[in-house]
Image (cartoon, one colour):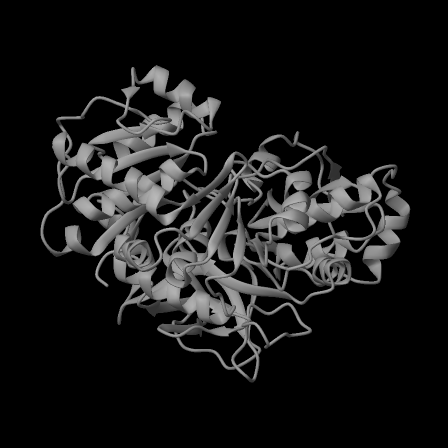
Length: 503
């Protein structure tokens, strides 16, 4: 296979009547979805969308989004997914950043997408439920080998800076689809709960491409709702449930809030979390409630899928992200660029078949992260143990310098979340002068609990060195989140008034 649509075409030819998408209104088989792919492919051809053009898809999950991804592949265009719940200015910025030829809006399933479409004076597509903008005649198509290699642009979350356009390759997506399917023994009779936005690499690679590789079904939802997730587990034959740690935290919170003790999930056999650090307390709570191991992995937008996973049947009692997957290479590197031994923390470098082709038309940003030998410097901090399992500590940019010591926010967050009253925690550094930073914590509380600062201080004294303990703890109702489930820490810090530093 050379392009991602070929994975779909193989099942369309082999078993066209097999249900692929399970939707609130009914099921859609490979044949019916294929008809939408064909109509959109013809529409793109007729409208002059060429190989190497970019097509922005302002979307929430739906069959039309899947069809657009595949139709773009057929004509050689690059799909560029943007979550419909982004602000109008963000959508416009992404359209400019990707220099797109056309914009589609999944208006039928998303009021937000329909509103964006109205702002762009979009008209009806040949496929019901979609709106399309006028062609942007000024757009410049990519040519040459890059045009053939790239399948999509994924925009980074921008939690620590401006989002960048990651060029994801056909080969990387196809390869990881197979790797992911094999790691969890995905087969045609499996079904996954597909709420993760396909505008994110997790939803595109781990959910969609792996399912296409195996011919497995997707219970597709445009938005996440815990009640719907539990209903789907009980009644729609879901065997695989994947998502960031925040997904599982929300499911546990829903159980607590509604007094749910016994879960109905008769066919569930695989749980997986990624796209964020995993703490032991959450892992243990999920495993106790679901009665299954919680598998973990490490991936990022710049690598199609995951670099490391804990495979089905290889359960671990720790919070590691598992072992390198086939086709991936990984190093832990010190500040001097030299490899570090097991158990020593350093920056995670990686390369392999899933690595991006660079940031779209941003040579400077690409040069900042690429190293000799084709290695990508991730900006993530981690270490490996003796058997090569990866433990991710946090982000290099988020590391806090306090009294000359390094403080890793993840360690402080784990300690905070172990306190009875605290449901969630996010820790950031706040400049305190002379190269020093204060450790600032934001927490959400469990229902019916108040924060006893003295009790919390006593708890933290038993678990954290003095320089790691928060100078300030702020209680918030909720955390600002990206659409992929990551906390936007810069927004938390922006809301903190200047306060004197703690001693």
